[in-house]
Every structure is written in structure tokens, then in C-alpha cells.
Amino acid sequence: MRIGIGIPNQVRDVRASVIPAWARRAEEAGFSTLGTTGRFAYPGVMDTVALAAAAGATTTIGLLSQVLLATTWPGALLAKEAASIDGVSGGRLTLGIGVGIREDDFVAPGYGPRDRGARMDRDVPTYRSMWAGEPVPGSPNPAVPAGGRQVPLLFGATTAAAYRRMAQSSDGYIAGSVPAALASGAFEAARAAWQAAGRPGQPRLVALNYFALGDPDRGRANIADYYAATGDYQDVVVNNVHTDAESLREAVKQFEALGVDELVLGPGTDDLDEVTRLADIVL
Image (cartoon, rainbow, N blue to C red; front, side, top):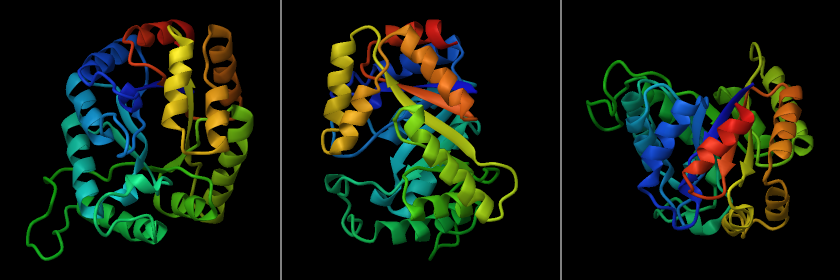
């Protein structure tokens, strides 16, 4: 199982200038992936901007949005953003997407929370078409440079529609930031949907958890703030923040036992030394 680390783009009032240094240190430490968690109505750094900054600061580490709120964007614009980041990085992006749950994140006119699932079903073929170099509707020109690729797609969420989309249209599944015992059911549902759709092999499975080592109280408080509008889920996430070596190593062991391909550990603070602290424990 690979171990990735989150970029602190979701930390309230993050020092945005730390992101390139964070990315470089994570790559040097040997993490497999840099992940972003983001939303619009929150004082952080946009997922796509953080991923582009990380792409420019590194050369080999993977890049993952976990998950980007795809239905808050026009599909064609997101497809071009994703292809651009993938191209700049030399083909290192995996686009993890979801439909979103907080109404205040839907700020673009005509892209509100209503019918967001239908928009997702409509937009995924748009992504594929644009990544294949087909012309933008109404134009003779494609939106992306020649020589690009189909950006790998992962889906999040635990609804029947999310599992269907994952199995029919993507490369795998991202579980929420919950303990392995809770995530196991979601991973089994993803595998079952994959098999029911007649897909060969197994879906790529990514687990998410949070950590806060240098300042556990501040880390938990930041994570609680970010999930403040999610009801009971907030408590589940905050109570699962790893603050010591024993807890982190146990989480790695449990997710590995579930057959997960990758565990990405997200930070509770933007303290750059957290990268080294985490690497010393899990790598």
C-alpha cells in the first residue's frame, strides 16, 4: 500500500506560500502522492491552484484531488483545468471528484445544488471528449493540446448513484476520512459495483485520514472547523485524527489489511515540519 500526504490547502487561512515548499519536501521524503481537499466557500486555496503549484514544484510525486466538487464547475472548464495540470505535471494527476453537499459552495449561476447528480452524469462524457482532443462544441478547436491523455478519474461518496458512476465511468473509488472499520463497507460496495458493471480487475481504492502531530489541539480544531456543517460526520472525522505514532501505524496496518491501494494522510495545520514528522513514522 502506498502512503500519500495531503497539501494543507484546506486549512483555514493557510499560508498559501507554504504549498510549493510542502510539495517539495513531501516528494523528497518519499510520499507517493500529494492530495488536496477543497471547497469554494472557505478561506483556503483552490484545489486546482494548489495542484498546479505542487506540479511546478515537483517532478515525480503523484497529484490527487480528494475530492474536487466537480458539479460546482461547468464541465468543459473543469476538463481543461484538469488536462492543463496533468500536462504541466507530465501526466501525474488523478482527478478525484464528487457532487458536493454544502449549498454555499455552489456559486456559479446555473450550477446550483439542484440536479447536481444529473450534471455529473452529463459532464463525465464531456471530460472524456475534451481529453480525447475533440473540438469544443460550437468551435473548430479542441480545448487541450495534442498529445494529452485521459486523466484518471476517481469518485467519492456513498450513494448508489456514486457507486454506479464509479463503476461505469472511472478508475476507482475514494472513501471518506473515517476509520478503517467504517471505510471497509464503502470499499466492499465499490468492489461489488465494479464487478456488477462487468469491469475487469479491481477498482483503484484510496483511503483518507487526518493527522496532527506538532500541535494536536490546533489540528483537531482546524479539521472540526472545516467539517462544521456536516453534522455527525464532523465528530467521526475529528475523533479519527491521528496525533501519535502508534495511532498512525495502526491505521496503516488496518487499511493495508483491507486491500487498499493508497492511504493519503491529510494535515490539520500548515506547519511544514509536519511533513517530516509524518514521514518519520509511516515511511
